[in-house]
Image (cartoon, rainbow, N blue to C red):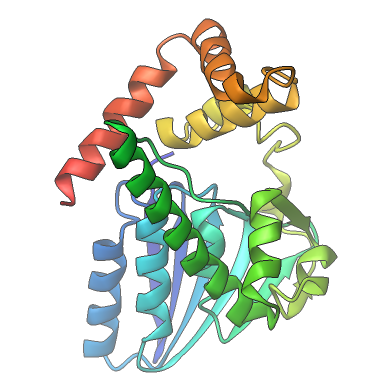
Length: 257
């Protein structure tokens, strides 16, 4: 689902709804920056951001987080149907955060695609570790827990719903069930078929397919070659997905150098 920003001002307050994939369509760091500059020029003093997103490009997520954190006014955020992956960081920008009884919230390690020689792969792996710690720092600041504790939750790809979001201190207030949230069937969200159904990016679908393969035990007997076996399984079950993922990654990576 292409990212959209729905903005509505009332007096000196602005409500923005972030819907769909982060880093796609309107829902980019530039798109949010344009909205905030326009709001400040109109004298807006407070913003309320409602997030309903499966995630997307991590760097856009952290950039939008920083834009909201540095807004010259008050910023509150709300988890509508779900705030997953990169979207979870955006939510953490709120001075006060609310979630619905049927909201979903998920944090995990950043994913990427690497190519080249051994030195290139080591450099990319180190970069991913640095990025992961940056994300964990955002969650740690929000919850008051340690960076290491957040990294452990990210490595486990941890999901929270309703009151669990409040108990984990990712939000402050629990709201009644959201009708929009209830309209989504996310029972198998982390599997590629359900992800594809909701029109998500190739990057999100690739990550979901890897998790599906791992959940099915693909490659478990030979850990050293597990990823290779999982990729082979994905190529068989989801033909063309690897090529889509590589093309999408390269297009974004090259465009932002």
